[in-house]
Image 1 (cartoon, one colour):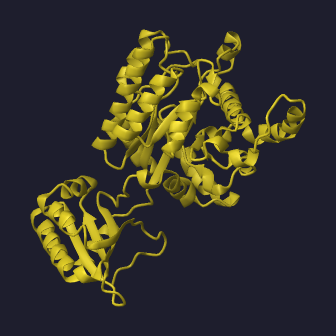
Image 2 (image 1 turned 180 degrees about the horizontal axis):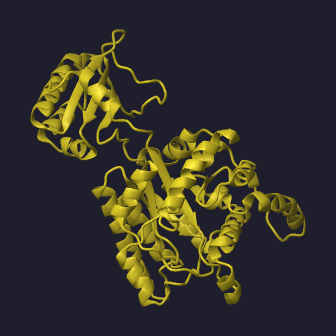
Length: 442
């Protein structure tokens, strides 16, 4: 092999700077989207101009802030101005561009697809295309789409499909459907109405039992839970009164709340964190930046302050910045990178009668890959002493691109096809460093 396994392990672990962190709340503002909004005179629809966005600048911010992966979503306003086909076309273009960014920058971006609501048939069509063809990691839903609030029965067919897909749904506040123009001009939407709007739509979803009727949805509430810590106690106390009067149906509030997650975009002060912990467990709290709506230096200093503050609230920074998002997205989360390298383990159980034949295949593909592929640094196979049919392969690639290239080679496909009947089980283990242990290799 090119290098000894010890040398490769040292290289891999020395490349680790910090745990890969995930940003659940960021926006891509693409040219097609911006042009369509401007063409309809809606660039100030949310009370302030849409910020400029550039992918290279976004990555530069992520690198400075220590963020490995950002989840992209469409910002407000919703691209709907009465023309259903035009709106669907803009959302399709947006989703395809986000999918291209995800492919072009492996491991750096995920995206939750935009849907052309309030047109439900087109939204359902786009959800299918985004999730099943483009590989979207979920969908983004506006709190309301020109008066159509989440919880509206008109959305049931869409929600049923998203439930079947076990979809992650990222909520984002939009301008309420009826507002006092002067009030919104004097007090920015983002300072109050966005928080009220998020609270309004979540309570409407709970009142209509959406998250119990569609139990496989995983919904991310933005901005530290908005006003929910204050509103939920009142909602709970009023619910039985309203049910008794025949004005509401009984709902399981706790069951609905159990499907909610919360990002920390906004202002996660000590008081806000304490309030948020009254309505959700720590494993449902996630980091969010709200890039590019906040100036980069403020985001970076705010993130650093948050990192140092979490422990005083009984929160593990690794959970908030990394592990909770890993559990939320599961297999959709990009493979973890170590610097530019990709390090993981393959855990394989071979059918005993094929063990010798399997080992010949593994030896051939390992030697060929390392010999002819510059991006394959090692494929190091090991058997357990207790059970020789239990095999581990340490895989180290120069990059995600090198791994993707490797699995398209003729020698890998020969190995994959030739050993299909020989493998009883296969588990790919995405590895990560043990922070603070020194990671010594002797």
